[in-house]
Length: 220
Ligand SMILES: C[S@@+](CC[C@H](N)C(=O)[O-])C[C@H]1O[C@@H](n2cnc3c(N)ncnc32)[C@H](O)[C@@H]1O
Image (cartoon, rainbow, N blue to C red):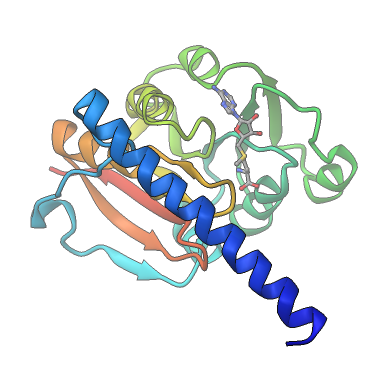
């Protein structure tokens, strides 16, 4: 075996050891706590999925959301998706909230937001959304705290802040993040929310690493 082959073999061993540790750890977690380490997403009923449109990615989803609308992005990081929102949806107002704007790419953002539709809020998402009137937004894109509790918190406040026909879109609808190797509570929070408050899936966008997006609205 050449040097490259040896290095690949060593890496494979390293990854397999980490995988075994993870499997062992999560098994012990369940034994100790009585509940699974990874947040399980409850089964939805057909009525929550009927008519849901499957899309290749979240940019296609953006194309289907209301244009020239009042909208919000919860969690923006560098602001790259916020730029996509402006380019695709021409919002009347785009509220961008994040607990930190340290990484936000202001120059690139200003080049795109020539109409000045966006307002940035450096604060906690729930605190920010609470300050808006009930049923204010046409849609809210949630991509902030991905823990189960965090996603649930955002969904509960967003529900009161979108119009009756409004959408909530959740990014990272999954149970496990393959890049950070951490659990993700979004799928559990979304399914529970749809079951408890009678919401349905309208659009479901795929992503190559299973960081799906789901758009939901009220089921009447
Ligand atoms: C995955 S990044 C967002 C990425 C962005 N939406 C995109 O698609 O390019 C998640 C962001 O959520 C922010 N965040 C986490 N918890 C938050 C909270 N409670 N309130 C507001 N922002 C939060 C983080 O600071 C981070 O910038």
